[in-house]
Image (cartoon, rainbow, N blue to C red):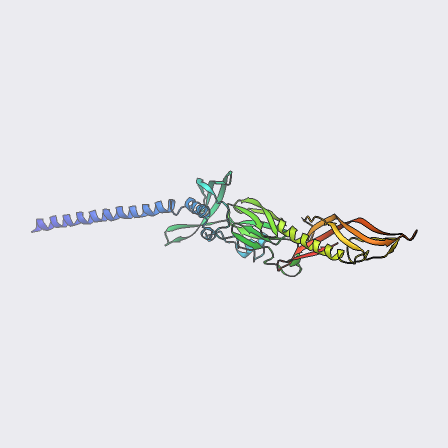
Length: 348
């Protein structure tokens, strides 16, 4: 009995030792797995790579909500930005091109736990290397690493909308007057800052019935501030509508049966006696061309020709005759687009 008991106890201890060893091995494997996750999937390099890939995939909401991306009020103030700076561009279908061929080429761990992660990527036609500083935050479930950008990678694009408050970026059309009031609204050129995800390429332009702006492409790097001017010009439709108003105005002048039509750019001074109603016709209307001025689209003084036909009696010999004469004149104007889309033309 005694021998069997001792042998049974020995077997039991061996079993306990075996299970304990297995438990230790499992525990080691478990912590090794967590270590591998923290080093790879939850590592600083992966954090930066996921941010860049979100931009590349046009998942801008994901990129914008990455820890450390949002700017607080103190950071906005330090950058000279208003607390209500526009975030309208932080959405999908705005970025023209995100980073491509993304590679992490360096990950330097520092004594304070932060990392300097250097990424290489192609942006438009350029190969760019950017170093991001990331720092640890409270771990997920208490064990999995989490990170945030020590400095927000958001860029600021100062957009100047020249001769037109609107501009288009990607599929989004914005009004630079959105946060303005009073006399500012009447300006011919407007400027406003916009937060933009970076790194990325943006294309700015504008196209409407009356105005058009040539595309301007801008590449922005993380934490960079840059500017772009969207310069709107009059379209042929705008010019045609102004031309129609000019022609209508001149026809009204020509309809006045007097030598000096009121408030009109042409007229005649004749020494002989007028014995019939003067008849004016417009032989050549000024050809309207519009260029941006200081506060309106302008037409520089442009020549036109009015023809006068009038019956006269000579004061010298009393003879009657008909005068047929061309009168050259010039016309200048300012043209503005009203809020309702109509055109205001001011002649000068």
